[in-house]
Length: 490
Image 1 (spheres, one colour):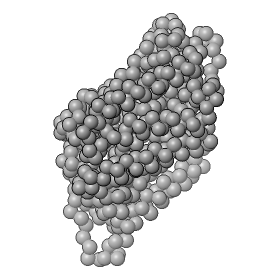
Image 2: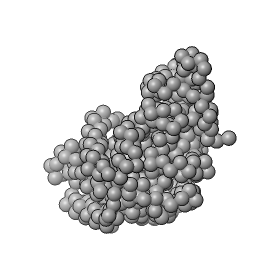
Image 3: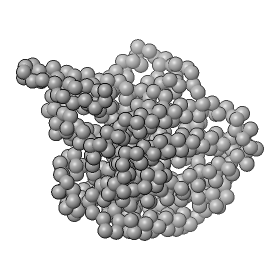
Image 4: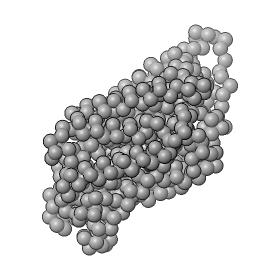
Protein backbone atom coordinates (compact mmCIF):
# COMPACT_ATOMS: atom_id res chain seq x y z
CA UNK A 1 0.00 0.00 0.00
CA UNK A 2 1.42 3.38 -1.01
CA UNK A 3 1.82 6.30 1.39
CA UNK A 4 -0.83 8.21 -0.53
CA UNK A 5 -3.43 5.49 0.05
CA UNK A 6 -2.64 5.55 3.75
CA UNK A 7 -2.83 9.33 3.86
CA UNK A 8 -6.19 9.21 2.06
CA UNK A 9 -7.53 6.71 4.65
CA UNK A 10 -6.24 8.89 7.51
CA UNK A 11 -7.83 12.08 6.16
CA UNK A 12 -11.12 10.35 5.33
CA UNK A 13 -11.29 8.83 8.78
CA UNK A 14 -10.70 12.20 10.40
CA UNK A 15 -13.51 13.87 8.44
CA UNK A 16 -15.93 11.12 9.48
CA UNK A 17 -15.07 11.73 13.15
CA UNK A 18 -15.26 15.48 12.70
CA UNK A 19 -18.72 15.16 11.11
CA UNK A 20 -19.99 12.96 13.93
CA UNK A 21 -18.62 15.37 16.53
CA UNK A 22 -20.31 18.31 14.79
CA UNK A 23 -23.68 16.56 14.99
CA UNK A 24 -23.18 15.38 18.58
CA UNK A 25 -21.93 18.76 19.82
CA UNK A 26 -24.87 20.78 18.50
CA UNK A 27 -26.35 22.98 21.25
CA UNK A 28 -23.65 21.92 23.69
CA UNK A 29 -22.39 23.81 26.74
CA UNK A 30 -19.66 23.34 29.33
CA UNK A 31 -21.66 20.86 31.40
CA UNK A 32 -22.25 18.76 28.29
CA UNK A 33 -18.53 18.97 27.56
CA UNK A 34 -17.70 17.69 31.06
CA UNK A 35 -20.55 15.24 31.78
CA UNK A 36 -22.50 14.68 28.51
CA UNK A 37 -25.51 15.89 30.49
CA UNK A 38 -25.63 12.52 32.32
CA UNK A 39 -27.80 11.26 29.46
CA UNK A 40 -25.46 8.99 27.50
CA UNK A 41 -26.72 5.39 26.87
CA UNK A 42 -24.76 2.94 29.02
CA UNK A 43 -24.23 0.43 26.19
CA UNK A 44 -22.73 3.08 23.90
CA UNK A 45 -20.34 4.12 26.68
CA UNK A 46 -19.40 0.48 27.30
CA UNK A 47 -18.47 -0.02 23.65
CA UNK A 48 -16.46 3.20 23.58
CA UNK A 49 -14.61 2.34 26.78
CA UNK A 50 -13.19 -0.78 25.15
CA UNK A 51 -11.36 1.36 22.60
CA UNK A 52 -10.25 3.83 25.27
CA UNK A 53 -8.82 1.13 27.53
CA UNK A 54 -7.11 -0.73 24.68
CA UNK A 55 -5.61 2.20 22.77
CA UNK A 56 -2.58 1.87 20.51
CA UNK A 57 -0.71 0.00 23.22
CA UNK A 58 -2.92 -3.07 23.05
CA UNK A 59 -3.39 -2.79 19.30
CA UNK A 60 0.33 -2.66 18.50
CA UNK A 61 2.49 -3.41 21.53
CA UNK A 62 0.62 -6.28 23.23
CA UNK A 63 0.88 -8.68 20.23
CA UNK A 64 4.60 -7.89 20.04
CA UNK A 65 5.02 -8.38 23.79
CA UNK A 66 4.25 -12.09 23.27
CA UNK A 67 7.81 -12.46 21.99
CA UNK A 68 9.23 -11.28 25.32
CA UNK A 69 6.79 -12.79 27.85
CA UNK A 70 4.62 -15.32 25.97
CA UNK A 71 0.95 -14.80 26.96
CA UNK A 72 1.77 -13.92 30.59
CA UNK A 73 0.18 -10.51 30.10
CA UNK A 74 -3.19 -12.28 30.41
CA UNK A 75 -2.45 -12.81 34.12
CA UNK A 76 -2.43 -9.03 34.42
CA UNK A 77 -5.76 -8.89 32.54
CA UNK A 78 -7.31 -11.30 35.08
CA UNK A 79 -6.37 -8.82 37.79
CA UNK A 80 -7.88 -6.05 35.68
CA UNK A 81 -11.19 -7.90 35.54
CA UNK A 82 -11.32 -8.33 39.33
CA UNK A 83 -10.56 -4.64 39.71
CA UNK A 84 -13.46 -3.67 37.44
CA UNK A 85 -15.84 -5.74 39.57
CA UNK A 86 -14.81 -3.81 42.69
CA UNK A 87 -15.16 -0.49 40.85
CA UNK A 88 -18.70 -1.36 39.78
CA UNK A 89 -19.73 -2.65 43.19
CA UNK A 90 -18.32 0.09 45.43
CA UNK A 91 -16.85 3.13 43.68
CA UNK A 92 -19.49 3.88 41.04
CA UNK A 93 -22.45 4.07 43.46
CA UNK A 94 -20.42 6.38 45.71
CA UNK A 95 -19.45 8.73 42.87
CA UNK A 96 -23.04 8.88 41.59
CA UNK A 97 -24.34 9.63 45.07
CA UNK A 98 -21.94 12.56 45.37
CA UNK A 99 -22.62 13.80 41.81
CA UNK A 100 -18.99 14.76 41.31
CA UNK A 101 -17.87 16.41 38.08
CA UNK A 102 -14.30 15.46 38.99
CA UNK A 103 -13.76 12.51 41.31
CA UNK A 104 -10.94 14.43 43.03
CA UNK A 105 -13.56 16.64 44.63
CA UNK A 106 -13.62 13.79 47.15
CA UNK A 107 -10.19 14.89 48.41
CA UNK A 108 -11.42 18.42 49.05
CA UNK A 109 -14.37 17.06 51.01
CA UNK A 110 -12.23 14.57 52.93
CA UNK A 111 -8.93 16.40 53.51
CA UNK A 112 -8.96 19.93 52.09
CA UNK A 113 -8.24 21.96 48.97
CA UNK A 114 -4.49 21.26 48.86
CA UNK A 115 -5.23 17.54 48.80
CA UNK A 116 -7.72 17.98 45.96
CA UNK A 117 -5.12 19.84 43.92
CA UNK A 118 -2.46 17.27 44.80
CA UNK A 119 -4.66 14.39 43.62
CA UNK A 120 -5.56 16.27 40.47
CA UNK A 121 -1.92 17.13 39.78
CA UNK A 122 -0.92 13.45 40.17
CA UNK A 123 -3.64 12.57 37.68
CA UNK A 124 -2.59 15.32 35.25
CA UNK A 125 1.02 14.16 35.24
CA UNK A 126 0.13 10.48 34.93
CA UNK A 127 -2.53 11.04 32.27
CA UNK A 128 -0.36 13.33 30.14
CA UNK A 129 2.50 10.84 30.23
CA UNK A 130 0.20 7.86 29.61
CA UNK A 131 -1.57 9.54 26.69
CA UNK A 132 1.78 10.57 25.22
CA UNK A 133 3.15 7.02 25.55
CA UNK A 134 0.13 5.60 23.75
CA UNK A 135 0.02 8.21 21.01
CA UNK A 136 3.78 8.01 20.55
CA UNK A 137 3.63 4.39 19.40
CA UNK A 138 0.90 5.14 16.87
CA UNK A 139 2.74 8.25 15.64
CA UNK A 140 5.84 6.12 14.99
CA UNK A 141 3.80 3.76 12.83
CA UNK A 142 2.29 6.62 10.81
CA UNK A 143 5.72 8.21 10.51
CA UNK A 144 7.19 5.03 9.03
CA UNK A 145 4.28 4.32 6.70
CA UNK A 146 3.20 7.79 5.59
CA UNK A 147 5.02 10.89 6.71
CA UNK A 148 8.64 9.77 6.45
CA UNK A 149 8.29 8.46 2.85
CA UNK A 150 6.69 11.82 1.95
CA UNK A 151 9.58 13.72 3.53
CA UNK A 152 7.53 15.05 6.47
CA UNK A 153 9.49 15.26 9.78
CA UNK A 154 8.28 13.27 12.80
CA UNK A 155 7.56 16.48 14.73
CA UNK A 156 5.23 17.69 12.00
CA UNK A 157 3.54 14.28 11.86
CA UNK A 158 2.80 14.39 15.59
CA UNK A 159 1.54 17.96 15.28
CA UNK A 160 -0.93 16.89 12.57
CA UNK A 161 -2.21 13.95 14.65
CA UNK A 162 -2.66 16.00 17.84
CA UNK A 163 -4.29 18.87 15.95
CA UNK A 164 -6.82 16.48 14.41
CA UNK A 165 -7.76 15.17 17.87
CA UNK A 166 -8.13 18.69 19.27
CA UNK A 167 -10.27 19.77 16.32
CA UNK A 168 -13.04 17.20 16.80
CA UNK A 169 -13.06 17.34 20.62
CA UNK A 170 -12.81 21.11 21.19
CA UNK A 171 -16.57 21.79 21.21
CA UNK A 172 -18.44 18.67 22.22
CA UNK A 173 -16.00 17.11 24.68
CA UNK A 174 -17.49 14.06 26.36
CA UNK A 175 -20.82 14.47 24.57
CA UNK A 176 -19.03 13.89 21.24
CA UNK A 177 -16.51 11.33 22.48
CA UNK A 178 -19.19 8.92 23.73
CA UNK A 179 -20.28 8.40 20.11
CA UNK A 180 -16.98 8.72 18.24
CA UNK A 181 -15.26 6.25 20.57
CA UNK A 182 -17.98 3.65 20.04
CA UNK A 183 -17.42 3.82 16.27
CA UNK A 184 -13.66 3.68 16.74
CA UNK A 185 -13.92 0.59 18.93
CA UNK A 186 -15.87 -1.24 16.23
CA UNK A 187 -13.18 -0.40 13.65
CA UNK A 188 -10.34 -1.39 16.00
CA UNK A 189 -11.88 -4.77 16.83
CA UNK A 190 -12.86 -5.37 13.21
CA UNK A 191 -9.25 -4.91 12.10
CA UNK A 192 -7.95 -7.25 14.79
CA UNK A 193 -10.50 -10.03 14.15
CA UNK A 194 -9.98 -9.91 10.37
CA UNK A 195 -6.20 -10.13 10.80
CA UNK A 196 -6.47 -12.95 13.35
CA UNK A 197 -8.68 -14.97 11.02
CA UNK A 198 -6.24 -14.51 8.15
CA UNK A 199 -3.18 -15.44 10.24
CA UNK A 200 -4.81 -18.57 11.70
CA UNK A 201 -5.65 -19.73 8.18
CA UNK A 202 -2.10 -19.07 6.95
CA UNK A 203 -0.28 -20.94 9.73
CA UNK A 204 -2.45 -24.05 9.58
CA UNK A 205 -5.27 -23.46 12.05
CA UNK A 206 -5.65 -23.16 15.82
CA UNK A 207 -3.71 -26.38 16.45
CA UNK A 208 -0.56 -24.66 15.21
CA UNK A 209 -1.09 -21.86 17.72
CA UNK A 210 -1.73 -24.24 20.62
CA UNK A 211 1.63 -25.91 19.99
CA UNK A 212 3.53 -22.64 19.82
CA UNK A 213 6.28 -22.00 22.37
CA UNK A 214 4.67 -18.59 22.99
CA UNK A 215 1.25 -20.03 23.90
CA UNK A 216 1.96 -20.13 27.65
CA UNK A 217 -0.36 -18.14 29.91
CA UNK A 218 0.61 -18.77 33.53
CA UNK A 219 4.06 -18.18 35.03
CA UNK A 220 4.61 -19.81 38.44
CA UNK A 221 8.26 -18.83 38.91
CA UNK A 222 8.21 -16.52 41.96
CA UNK A 223 11.51 -14.91 40.90
CA UNK A 224 10.11 -13.87 37.53
CA UNK A 225 8.74 -10.33 36.95
CA UNK A 226 5.70 -12.04 35.38
CA UNK A 227 4.98 -14.37 38.33
CA UNK A 228 1.24 -15.14 38.20
CA UNK A 229 0.24 -14.03 41.71
CA UNK A 230 2.27 -10.84 41.39
CA UNK A 231 0.73 -10.03 37.99
CA UNK A 232 -2.85 -10.66 39.11
CA UNK A 233 -2.48 -8.56 42.26
CA UNK A 234 -0.73 -5.77 40.36
CA UNK A 235 -3.41 -5.86 37.65
CA UNK A 236 -6.11 -5.59 40.29
CA UNK A 237 -4.63 -2.53 42.00
CA UNK A 238 -3.55 -0.81 38.80
CA UNK A 239 -7.12 -1.15 37.52
CA UNK A 240 -8.48 0.35 40.72
CA UNK A 241 -6.12 3.29 40.31
CA UNK A 242 -5.96 3.74 36.53
CA UNK A 243 -9.73 3.31 36.14
CA UNK A 244 -11.64 3.62 39.40
CA UNK A 245 -9.46 6.48 40.70
CA UNK A 246 -8.78 8.00 37.28
CA UNK A 247 -10.81 10.95 36.01
CA UNK A 248 -10.42 9.87 32.39
CA UNK A 249 -12.19 6.52 32.74
CA UNK A 250 -14.63 7.53 35.47
CA UNK A 251 -15.76 10.62 33.58
CA UNK A 252 -17.24 8.30 30.97
CA UNK A 253 -18.85 6.06 33.56
CA UNK A 254 -20.43 9.09 35.21
CA UNK A 255 -22.02 10.15 31.93
CA UNK A 256 -24.71 7.49 32.35
CA UNK A 257 -28.18 8.40 33.63
CA UNK A 258 -27.77 6.75 37.04
CA UNK A 259 -25.60 4.34 39.02
CA UNK A 260 -27.54 1.28 37.81
CA UNK A 261 -26.74 2.12 34.19
CA UNK A 262 -23.18 2.86 35.23
CA UNK A 263 -22.85 -0.61 36.72
CA UNK A 264 -24.35 -2.23 33.61
CA UNK A 265 -21.72 -0.35 31.63
CA UNK A 266 -18.71 -1.38 33.74
CA UNK A 267 -19.73 -5.04 34.13
CA UNK A 268 -20.46 -5.60 30.44
CA UNK A 269 -17.32 -3.73 29.45
CA UNK A 270 -15.11 -5.78 31.81
CA UNK A 271 -16.24 -9.09 30.29
CA UNK A 272 -15.61 -7.91 26.73
CA UNK A 273 -12.29 -6.40 27.85
CA UNK A 274 -11.00 -9.82 28.95
CA UNK A 275 -12.09 -11.50 25.72
CA UNK A 276 -10.57 -8.80 23.51
CA UNK A 277 -7.21 -8.85 25.30
CA UNK A 278 -7.09 -12.63 25.00
CA UNK A 279 -7.71 -12.32 21.26
CA UNK A 280 -4.91 -9.78 20.92
CA UNK A 281 -2.52 -12.15 22.69
CA UNK A 282 -3.61 -15.02 20.44
CA UNK A 283 -2.96 -12.69 17.50
CA UNK A 284 0.54 -12.12 18.87
CA UNK A 285 1.16 -15.89 18.97
CA UNK A 286 -0.18 -16.15 15.43
CA UNK A 287 2.07 -13.36 14.16
CA UNK A 288 5.21 -15.03 15.52
CA UNK A 289 4.10 -18.39 14.10
CA UNK A 290 3.64 -16.62 10.76
CA UNK A 291 7.25 -15.40 10.90
CA UNK A 292 8.43 -18.98 11.52
CA UNK A 293 6.31 -20.56 8.78
CA UNK A 294 7.27 -18.01 6.11
CA UNK A 295 10.83 -17.32 7.38
CA UNK A 296 10.18 -13.63 7.98
CA UNK A 297 12.72 -11.64 9.98
CA UNK A 298 11.23 -10.26 13.19
CA UNK A 299 11.78 -6.49 13.67
CA UNK A 300 14.29 -5.56 16.37
CA UNK A 301 11.54 -3.61 18.19
CA UNK A 302 8.63 -6.02 18.57
CA UNK A 303 6.14 -3.15 18.99
CA UNK A 304 6.29 -2.88 15.19
CA UNK A 305 5.76 -6.57 14.36
CA UNK A 306 2.03 -6.21 13.67
CA UNK A 307 2.49 -3.17 11.43
CA UNK A 308 5.53 -4.66 9.65
CA UNK A 309 3.81 -7.93 8.74
CA UNK A 310 0.57 -6.24 7.74
CA UNK A 311 2.14 -3.68 5.42
CA UNK A 312 4.65 -6.08 3.85
CA UNK A 313 3.07 -9.56 3.84
CA UNK A 314 -0.71 -9.22 4.17
CA UNK A 315 -3.32 -8.45 1.46
CA UNK A 316 -4.55 -4.93 0.65
CA UNK A 317 -7.89 -5.16 2.50
CA UNK A 318 -6.09 -6.07 5.75
CA UNK A 319 -3.69 -3.19 5.23
CA UNK A 320 -6.60 -0.80 4.88
CA UNK A 321 -8.32 -2.20 7.98
CA UNK A 322 -5.04 -1.96 9.88
CA UNK A 323 -4.67 1.75 9.06
CA UNK A 324 -8.23 2.42 10.19
CA UNK A 325 -7.58 0.37 13.33
CA UNK A 326 -4.44 2.37 14.10
CA UNK A 327 -6.40 5.61 13.69
CA UNK A 328 -9.11 4.30 15.99
CA UNK A 329 -6.56 3.13 18.57
CA UNK A 330 -4.86 6.52 18.61
CA UNK A 331 -7.95 8.69 18.71
CA UNK A 332 -10.15 6.64 21.07
CA UNK A 333 -7.58 6.98 23.85
CA UNK A 334 -6.20 10.46 23.25
CA UNK A 335 -9.53 12.25 22.76
CA UNK A 336 -10.91 11.22 26.15
CA UNK A 337 -7.54 11.99 27.77
CA UNK A 338 -7.66 15.58 26.52
CA UNK A 339 -11.22 16.00 27.74
CA UNK A 340 -10.52 14.58 31.21
CA UNK A 341 -7.36 16.69 31.56
CA UNK A 342 -9.35 19.83 30.78
CA UNK A 343 -12.11 18.79 33.20
CA UNK A 344 -9.79 18.06 36.11
CA UNK A 345 -7.80 21.26 35.63
CA UNK A 346 -10.93 23.43 35.57
CA UNK A 347 -12.66 21.74 38.53
CA UNK A 348 -9.74 20.75 40.76
CA UNK A 349 -6.94 23.22 40.05
CA UNK A 350 -8.98 26.34 39.18
CA UNK A 351 -11.84 25.40 41.56
CA UNK A 352 -14.65 26.22 39.12
CA UNK A 353 -18.08 25.96 40.73
CA UNK A 354 -21.30 25.09 38.85
CA UNK A 355 -21.80 28.69 37.75
CA UNK A 356 -18.33 28.91 36.23
CA UNK A 357 -18.66 25.46 34.68
CA UNK A 358 -21.73 26.72 32.85
CA UNK A 359 -20.30 30.02 31.62
CA UNK A 360 -16.54 29.95 30.96
CA UNK A 361 -16.67 28.35 27.51
CA UNK A 362 -13.86 30.41 25.92
CA UNK A 363 -11.53 29.88 28.89
CA UNK A 364 -12.22 26.15 28.83
CA UNK A 365 -11.30 26.23 25.13
CA UNK A 366 -7.92 27.85 25.86
CA UNK A 367 -7.17 25.22 28.50
CA UNK A 368 -8.04 22.49 26.00
CA UNK A 369 -5.55 23.99 23.52
CA UNK A 370 -2.86 24.23 26.20
CA UNK A 371 -3.11 20.54 27.05
CA UNK A 372 -2.95 19.65 23.34
CA UNK A 373 0.34 21.56 23.08
CA UNK A 374 1.74 19.93 26.23
CA UNK A 375 0.78 16.49 24.89
CA UNK A 376 2.65 17.26 21.67
CA UNK A 377 5.79 18.33 23.54
CA UNK A 378 5.83 15.22 25.76
CA UNK A 379 5.55 12.94 22.72
CA UNK A 380 8.56 14.65 21.15
CA UNK A 381 10.57 14.24 24.37
CA UNK A 382 9.58 10.59 24.61
CA UNK A 383 10.67 10.09 21.00
CA UNK A 384 14.19 11.15 21.97
CA UNK A 385 14.65 8.86 24.98
CA UNK A 386 12.46 5.73 24.64
CA UNK A 387 14.21 2.36 24.47
CA UNK A 388 11.66 -0.02 26.02
CA UNK A 389 8.46 -1.75 25.03
CA UNK A 390 5.73 0.86 25.38
CA UNK A 391 3.35 -1.45 27.26
CA UNK A 392 6.04 -2.08 29.89
CA UNK A 393 6.93 1.60 30.06
CA UNK A 394 3.35 2.72 30.65
CA UNK A 395 2.60 0.39 33.55
CA UNK A 396 5.97 0.97 35.17
CA UNK A 397 5.39 4.72 35.10
CA UNK A 398 1.83 4.22 36.38
CA UNK A 399 3.19 2.47 39.44
CA UNK A 400 5.04 5.64 40.42
CA UNK A 401 2.51 8.25 39.29
CA UNK A 402 -0.75 6.65 40.49
CA UNK A 403 0.58 5.24 43.78
CA UNK A 404 -0.12 8.41 45.80
CA UNK A 405 -3.71 8.42 44.50
CA UNK A 406 -4.16 4.83 45.69
CA UNK A 407 -2.93 5.73 49.18
CA UNK A 408 -5.09 8.87 49.36
CA UNK A 409 -8.28 7.10 48.33
CA UNK A 410 -7.75 4.08 50.60
CA UNK A 411 -6.92 6.34 53.56
CA UNK A 412 -9.99 8.47 52.86
CA UNK A 413 -12.41 5.60 52.24
CA UNK A 414 -11.51 3.26 55.06
CA UNK A 415 -10.46 5.48 57.96
CA UNK A 416 -11.91 8.34 59.98
CA UNK A 417 -8.45 9.81 60.51
CA UNK A 418 -7.70 13.40 59.62
CA UNK A 419 -4.40 14.44 58.04
CA UNK A 420 -2.41 17.66 57.62
CA UNK A 421 -3.81 19.01 54.35
CA UNK A 422 -0.90 21.39 53.65
CA UNK A 423 1.64 18.54 53.86
CA UNK A 424 -0.14 16.25 51.37
CA UNK A 425 1.71 17.68 48.30
CA UNK A 426 5.03 16.88 50.01
CA UNK A 427 3.82 13.38 50.86
CA UNK A 428 2.84 12.84 47.20
CA UNK A 429 6.42 13.68 46.14
CA UNK A 430 8.16 11.62 48.82
CA UNK A 431 6.06 8.51 48.18
CA UNK A 432 7.30 7.78 44.59
CA UNK A 433 10.87 8.67 45.60
CA UNK A 434 10.68 6.24 48.52
CA UNK A 435 9.24 3.59 46.20
CA UNK A 436 12.11 3.98 43.76
CA UNK A 437 14.67 3.67 46.58
CA UNK A 438 12.84 0.59 47.89
CA UNK A 439 13.01 -1.08 44.45
CA UNK A 440 16.78 -0.52 44.30
CA UNK A 441 17.29 -1.93 47.81
CA UNK A 442 15.05 -4.95 47.10
CA UNK A 443 17.01 -5.84 43.97
CA UNK A 444 20.23 -5.67 46.01
CA UNK A 445 18.85 -7.94 48.75
CA UNK A 446 17.22 -10.40 46.33
CA UNK A 447 19.22 -10.34 43.07
CA UNK A 448 17.09 -13.11 41.60
CA UNK A 449 13.84 -11.22 42.20
CA UNK A 450 12.77 -8.79 39.47
CA UNK A 451 10.55 -5.91 40.53
CA UNK A 452 7.52 -5.48 38.30
CA UNK A 453 4.12 -3.78 38.34
CA UNK A 454 3.74 -4.46 42.08
CA UNK A 455 5.56 -1.18 42.76
CA UNK A 456 2.18 0.55 42.94
CA UNK A 457 1.30 -1.45 46.09
CA UNK A 458 4.32 -0.28 48.03
CA UNK A 459 3.80 3.25 46.69
CA UNK A 460 0.22 3.26 47.96
CA UNK A 461 1.19 1.83 51.36
CA UNK A 462 3.93 4.44 51.73
CA UNK A 463 1.50 7.26 50.90
CA UNK A 464 -0.95 5.84 53.44
CA UNK A 465 1.77 5.94 56.11
CA UNK A 466 2.66 9.51 55.22
CA UNK A 467 -0.98 10.55 55.57
CA UNK A 468 -1.08 8.83 58.95
CA UNK A 469 2.03 10.76 60.03
CA UNK A 470 0.23 13.92 58.91
CA UNK A 471 -2.39 13.23 61.57
CA UNK A 472 0.32 12.89 64.21
CA UNK A 473 1.91 16.18 63.14
CA UNK A 474 -1.44 17.96 63.18
CA UNK A 475 -2.28 16.53 66.62
CA UNK A 476 1.03 17.78 67.99
CA UNK A 477 0.30 21.24 66.62
CA UNK A 478 -3.34 21.25 67.76
CA UNK A 479 -3.71 18.85 70.70
CA UNK A 480 -7.47 19.42 70.94
CA UNK A 481 -8.19 18.60 67.31
CA UNK A 482 -10.42 15.53 66.82
CA UNK A 483 -10.53 13.02 63.96
CA UNK A 484 -12.98 13.86 61.20
CA UNK A 485 -16.33 12.03 61.22
CA UNK A 486 -16.10 10.73 57.68
CA UNK A 487 -16.55 7.13 56.67
CA UNK A 488 -17.38 5.83 53.21
CA UNK A 489 -17.21 2.05 53.53
CA UNK A 490 -18.07 0.14 56.66
